[in-house]
Length: 112
Length: 113
Image (cartoon, rainbow over all chains, first blue to last red):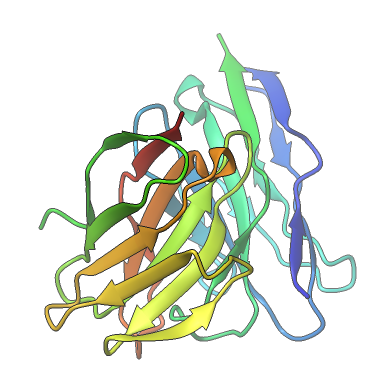
């Protein structure tokens, strides 16, 4: 079975502070990990995926297979980063045609 | 390109009724996946359609069924509605043989009274 755990339901930081949204997963094989974001009144959209190894809007995430984690980090949070963030897993790498398993999400609020 | 479009936006039904939700995939995509998002939860996979066939299914009862048409659009049908079926229903499209991620629609908000 595959599972994604986001331990924090809510996270509040001040503008300019570092932010880390935690994600842990459970999967016996080689997963592909994603972070999706949903801004207020917008649709769910992909923020980044681990195989791309890129930084989007200043966010990065590193897959740690030893700790089965895929934490999302940004060194200096901005108010426009306030949104709902979902960590998600595909249980077979290299296929967008497989089902996504989502965590319950973390609501990030960046205060001025 | 309008991306993934879903209709209707909102729907109110009563227990025992049936409902049909519709999804048009992003241009160039041939695979449609449906997810249910209950309040305060992440989306949960219902099933996926490719070449007009159900390819994968999540842990949902047979009351949930679907269909894909030759133009790749899809419908989600739910029979004998229960209060617990109240949720946001999301459609995501992708290209079956591509490694590109799934694109999501805005969803249909279904409320059961």
